[in-house]
Length: 573
Image (cartoon, rainbow, N blue to C red; front, side, top):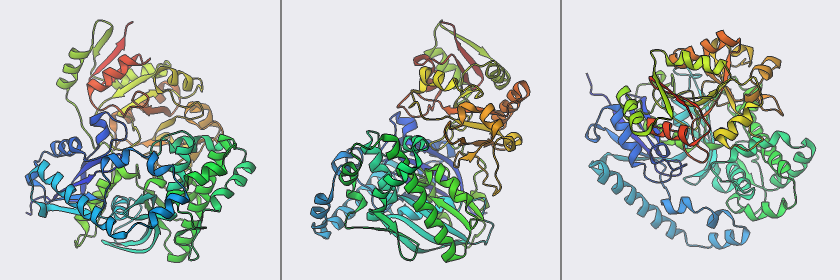
């Protein structure tokens, strides 16, 4: 038998991380922020690389290849100091366009050499093992090779859309077997994602992190005012004549649109700005997707890139009659690039056309801690003010507490990958009383008052709360769904109060048997088939990783209960 093919994928930009694949299956993937404890960590992800190798049970010498995502990546300092190149206008654009192009080539070659040296020195591997995968190709291959809606040999329409990477802000491709044929691309100066991030900055929030806050505020806007305000964006960006791309509507590049947006929206209500931004994004994406399907005749879509983190737009795309099926890569922003790098290098040039090995059963791709490690953390960090009980069935007790209206943090099993907490590093509460939103925010989350939480639904009960006619398989909080009266009643705290949508995670027994059983026990006691599930972290921090992280958050917040692996912890003070 052939030796297994291990490939290490690395993303060294913002929200950096690493993935390890074996024979086309992703066996581990971690974002560096979970280990460094710095939100949206930037740069070379040394800790994540070491951890995914440890989870995979191999050393670096076993690797067949190491694949960097993105042909070019800026230095860490550039990616952490945004104001200098975000808050600019047409004057800076003209000055930058006048710079000699040879300078860019020198920087590109210099950074490539630095990146090769960094990983070779870290892992003690030869440079011949290091390869690079273009940014939007990595976004697409992460989606295409993990897509459950594409049968072996079936054609797929591959779409990517983001801020920018390797000079592009999007692409259109026809995917079949191991062949990816790019038929259109979106230049970085015509970036839809850059508009959303610039508005995020303009509104006093953090780009690449707080765009979801604009999306949450948007439904509160007056529709007529939002539509009128969206004319500002329509004067900047439009669909290309062939319908496969976006193009500038004027000289102004989206890289340099901040000052124009600031001037245009001065004295405009904040909810109107949010509503206009979301409306324009939905309008552009829906029209683009509709045109791409018409041009190619392919209605089965796979999609990746940060713009597809917009769950409201994903819902509208899925509702298009010409879209037969849709799969959006879970956590589709740049944290998914290392996965795409692994899978592209595995399948590229291979005769193996069956990608089913790469489809995600679950996203629990991170570290799992032993009972001994849990005990060590408890001994080191807990005092007399904590009651600690070891239980054979922690989740049944958690279900009882939740049914009694308690808030319980849960840190059990392998850590989930991506931006969404999926039950193993989550704070859980019954969602039938909307007042729990204030309770959660006071106790720990400190979220903006207009932001809804999201629910986890047991698969067997999901039909009570959402309709999924196109079998989107919403296992990873990638889409929103409209919910009816029962959903608004049972999941009030997990439903957007303005448009009555929910960003659901449907939990299957196969993906997470313990969490599925917890949901079932809760439903038996209450008749409600879902729980509010929000990420287990302090405000401004990454989701917890280790038992030590979990205990620290318990101690420093208003939380009272923590299910930590085999133990249930309760504050007595």
